Length: 75
Image (cartoon, rainbow, N blue to C red; front, side, top):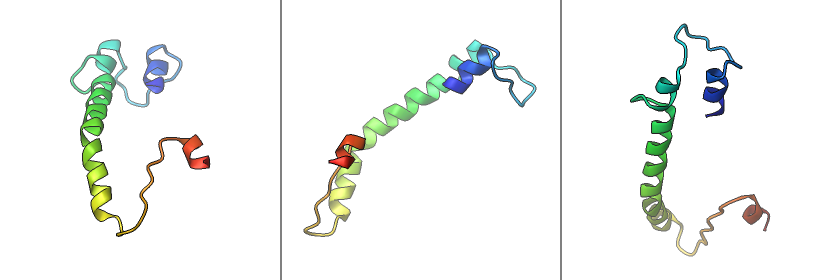
């Protein structure tokens, strides 16, 4: 997103000859915004499946810990 905004505002040049436009960046079929929404939705739908896969493949008796951020890692 940051890179696209820099290119749209003229702060960063693009290597290809085609200029990035607002409509191409956010409203086209292969837009950055559409891709981000699609990937996020796919990740959220797979989350329960990931939990089951970890439970099924964990060594019996092993404790599985899900860390959700750096503070949990430190703790």
